[in-house]
Every structure is written in C-alpha cells, then in structure tokens.
Image (cartoon, rainbow, N blue to C red; front, top):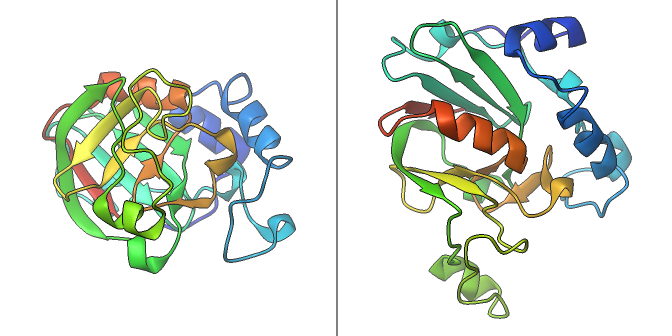
Amino acid sequence: MSSHPVSRRMLLSSTGLMLGALAMPAVLRAQSLPDYETEAPAETVRRNVMGFTQQVWQDHFSHLRRGAILCDTQSRAVHFWSEDESTHLAYPSSVPMTEEFTRRGMTEVTLKRHMPTWIPTPNMRERDPSLPERVEGGDPKNPMGTRAMNLSWQYYRVHGIDNPAKVGRRASNGCFGLMNAHVEELYELVQVGTQVRVI
C-alpha cells in the first residue's frame, strides 16, 4: 500500500482544492483554539494537510462504481475519487477519539442529509446526560454541521462540524467531521451507494 508523505505541490495538484484560500486558514486557526486531543500534547499533534498520506484508490478498492471515499484515521483525512477518475479530493477531518469508537472496514453511503438534525446516541447520553436531546439543522451548535452522509454502520457518518478546532484531531464518537465548506463540496459529488473504506 502507498504511504508516502505528500508534498504541498502534490496535494494541491491532486486534489484540485484551493486549500490556501479555504482550508489552510481554518487549520491554522485550530492551533490556537482549545485542544481536544487526548493522545498527545497540543504542540506535538499533526493538524495540517502536510500530514496527509498519499493514497491511490487501487490500494483500497477493486472498482470506482459510484465513486469511493477513504477515511484515513492515521493521517486524519478523507479522500474521494470519482467514478471516472477525473476527481481526487482530500480533506482534513476529525477522527474518532479512541479505538473504542473506531470501526474499520468497508461500508457505504446509505443516506444523504442536508442541514441534518443531530440526536445524540444512547451511549453518548449515558456518558454525558447533560447533552441536549436534539439539535436542529441550521443551528450553529449542531455537531453535524451543514451536511451528513450516513454510512451503513449505525451511528457512523461523514459530516460537517460545529467547531473548526476539531478538524485534524481525535474529537469524534466514531464519525469523520469535515469543515462545512468541504462537506458541502463532497456532498454534491457523493451518491447513495458510494463505497466507503475506513482504515
């Protein structure tokens, strides 16, 4: 499998993103916001796109029918390849807080939700009874942000985020959180049935 660090030039050319205008300021701001990490001090945690690992779809999928999403827990990135191979995008993301919340393997997108309502899982409410019963879509405090793509695994999603400081960190209960601008772009490209692999 490919696991070579990606240079800034390679990342920008392979993703087609204007990270300098969109993602980088958010990543840089995250360094001065409260630290959500549990595994290492803030100054030693990789939070930026230079920590991405180069990925090729052939290492993870046998085909690209309906496209493919790779959620990389190690480099804290979400990759997308279009069915015709014309598009490869990579976004920084939050990842599960601990191995307990991490599920790996193959799944797929089963539902796309615009301005999703967030309802804490029973386990989340058990751990923290102070959580609200629900947060409506459009509320800036909604942990799912502006878009969500449900996976076939119950309670697992690729979605937006309420706090940019979480991006690039171990900050979720199992989901992969993207900056809202990024998840909105990805949402338009993904279909119900798009395959997803978590590594």
